[in-house]
Image (cartoon, rainbow, N blue to C red; front, side, top):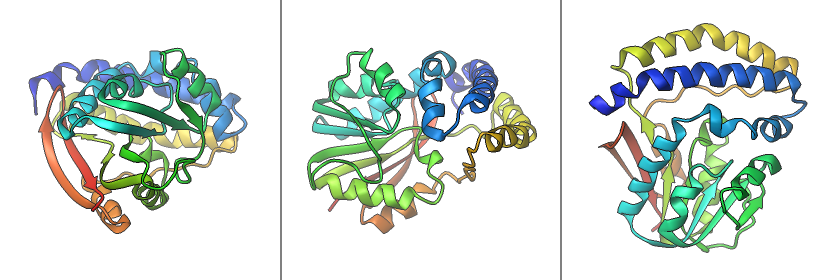
Length: 240
């Protein structure tokens, strides 16, 4: 485990606690999943501050794959990742189902943003060079296959699909503590969500989970470990 990751563990832990409090509050107020993300968009960037480090690391991974004509970020949210990815391509397109999140992304100077479903993207076949979804797939329990098939459709032959890099933190004391605490708080969080009709329940995945789903969609898949600011398991697929 890198020393940089350990130095960032305590801030990440505090971010998790603040995020949980925000999520519980907005979960109580929201009437639907889309309404929840619209409302929470005002606070997203301030709560998940560690996302900025994650975004920079992800951009470095993308840059190593090459410079692209068109990058599509499926589930771009408030544009935290988009702002890092846009300089790596000629054309950037962000897709998200939340109007509130897209509004925040536009405040970052992002323009080509589309409101839509990432499992049915409003894009032509073979029109993208790289498709990525960062911090989103965990919210698609049992639908990740639909997403990867859709990503395969919109990619040109030879195009890349980057599944969200997974930080490795099993040996880090602070994050092990956060994991144990999350196991205790999860029933409370889920109860609040169900009170508001939000029944999403995302199962925990192992590090190699995305690879089989991508292979079934038709990708040639490579799994590797990378040490950047943090340590990651990286899963990329190439369309033959």
